[in-house]
Image (cartoon, rainbow over all chains, first blue to last red; front, side, top):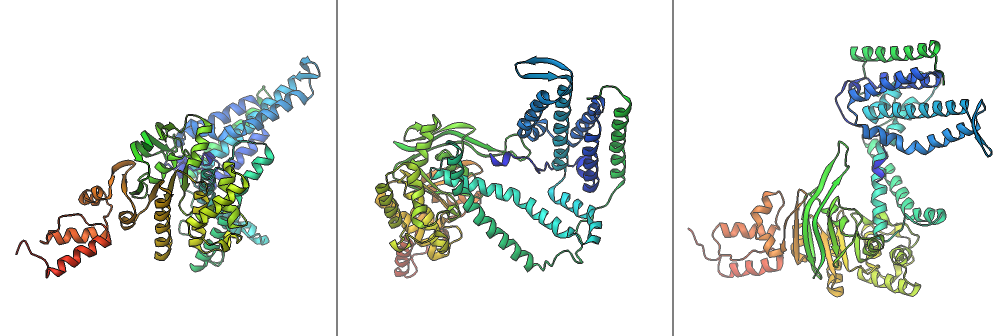
Length: 270
Length: 291
């Protein structure tokens, strides 16, 4: 049940998308998000969606997985959409009781819903095709210039790597502890908020205890292998940008530019 | 009547992802009341998955589980009752301890069961006795105990619910030899005094041969064999073929009989082995068949 959460869940594969340099993918995703919030044109969104769809097809990520990523945020989308529909001012289309629906409201609602969905689907593309370790490597490399202003890039990256590494472990552990407490008759599913919060205690305490134990063990294991921070550390797997990265990066960048141009010159602004 | 019965039990993890894996398939099993069943099999042979079905923590993808003749997935109430009827002690159960005192932790199960305070007190006392924890631990924090003691507290937490069936998943994993003997003999005496059904998952053939009345051998998600200790270890060669071992004394006596000594039985426990060896020695090395 807990393992159904897909954020950061990697689908191993050998497609072009998988083989791309994580730095390139990361930059492209950031660009994608910027473009998402720049454009307001229906055709631009159509193009971006199409582009995402093609990349998903190339990466051979099953549609089910995309759906699983979107499902948890549906309430959020619905909520913002409803707020937008009822509270954005514009030309009234329908009105009843104290509510009135305006054309601008509908448009804003659609715009926000499309943006959120594309945002989630786009970033899940990154995490589905890039292993968390590759991702933190990319982040470390991309933020390296910040070292000049004494920003602890390596430490941050190491913390992220460790955190990511332990998400599945801790989820598994939580699952195990939940099963164990359920076997002792713990009721986690019924009752009001207070009762449910209380029911979490038998799970949270063992989880914290084990997290601290693991942290200590890991620190010890790292020290045993002479870990002394990032100073002078080299990498076993060097990242390097290949022709593949430049080509695919250019193609995607071109799509973004077209999307922005469409936004400027085509009608159909949301 | 069989207290535990499964029909065509099949379970598969991570349905619809690249990590899909069938953990158990088509398991048909009948375990009679009052047995002490040893469950053996490789890591990944489906032992843990199977036992989690027996108290309804996992729901089978297909097939049925009957406890005491009732289908445990018939309704939510039956399922909740089953959790108390079939006590499950997980691997490394000490990691589930959370309360301030040993007493409170052991009382967690009985309290969920809805027992009265007096009943809870009696259940805790009984459970602590069953696992050999003296009264002075009652008000200690479970986190200041030793590993073996923590484990016994955790086992007591399940025993306190007075289950009809007690399932233990590798209760001796990670303990020193003294600790493991302690726990196993406590489990055996608990089984003997309560006359309930106990399932004991273990990697040690020696332990199973010594304590169990029946042996369930799992292999690649299916039941390889289920029978008495004697029946099981008489199939020593087949068992070794699937990569499991038989007790070392059994191996020793197999080798002795192959090299010509007259041994007409399968030996799997040390006491019996000692007697037979003494007999052989007193016959001055025994009679050699072939020479």
